[in-house]
Length: 201
Image (cartoon, rainbow, N blue to C red):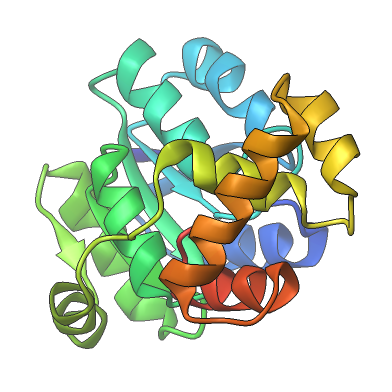
């Protein structure tokens, strides 16, 4: 029996996934969480074989949670299941230690098969997305540029961002200018949209 932990912030999605997987003879859903920061405590308590991990969750995102699972429970495998088939997300998921990456509109049989394969230690990635990721290259943003852009998401001022990240306002402006140049955009909101669409954030 393959023990699965579901990590998704949408109750309906978690319920639907649990119902679908309950139809499989060899898969058992042993727990469900709705926040990224709840994943590791549940993994250490329930010892699942596979975590089905959404990307966008409150607390910490699924990619950070995946890295935390790999560090604390290396025998638990991670299968990222997301609405967003973005190349940057795939690259970051693999770097975080996920073995699989599938989109939520995949057929139910494909998801169950992906769980079985990941539980065996096999890598499972949508081939079209894998090809696009290889063609697209890595994110051009540095870690600090990414932090500044994420802090700008809610329309924060330069002063707000500087305060949150303990940087000077001049340094924040420099990072934002670099991000705008690298994304070939006119302002930070356009840069944010480009970076989000590419999965760099």
